[in-house]
Amino acid sequence: MKKLIQLTIALLAIPASAWAGSTPVTFDMLVSLGARGCVPNARGTVTITSVGPVEHMHVSVAGLPPNTEFAFFVTQLPTAPFGMSWLQGRIQTNHLGQGSQTFVGTFSIETFSVAPGVGPAPAVHFGPFPDATLNPAMNPIHMYHVGLWFGSHAAAVAAGCPNTVTPFDGEHDAGIQVLNTRQYHDDHGPLREVTSL
Image (cartoon, rainbow, N blue to C red; front, side):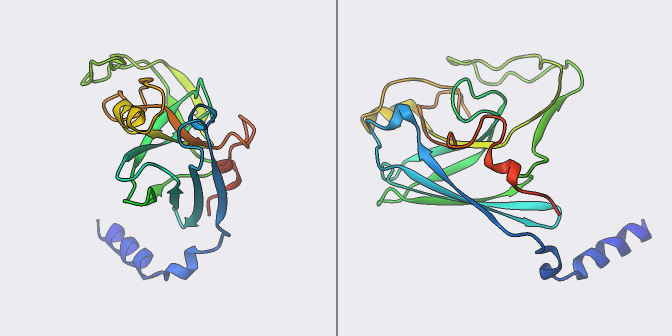
């Protein structure tokens, strides 16, 4: 235990500048094809900076409906069928339709999901996309794309978008995808350009 405390103190003593050895990676998010008719000016910019054992991902969005919540995902594919995806967090727009958020995690060439075996999963949502009660077994699958969805299908309809319900929010009743990284190849999304220190 004493050695663990000493190691922790030593790591805390390392200045932040020592971790800052990589160049930030910046890329745009494009308006999704399904949202062009209702939010044609939507846009986003993402900057990922490696800071030692993690990355900081700063996301800025604009041209969106004001005072609206959006769900931000890391995805395997930029467009349908999307592949493996996880909810990274939410972005709330202000009265000008602008928003930003900074996430901390692994957003690099090492970003992946894995399930060495099948196991029980909690079922807590039972709407149009009910939770699975077992996970499928799978080898590591890398996820190098990001996407932004309306946090509810009602918000999408209020913006003049299609009334399509998707599973891309915490309760699995989101609206359509608004922004994505489809300008990158399916197997070479922008997160693949980020190397961990």
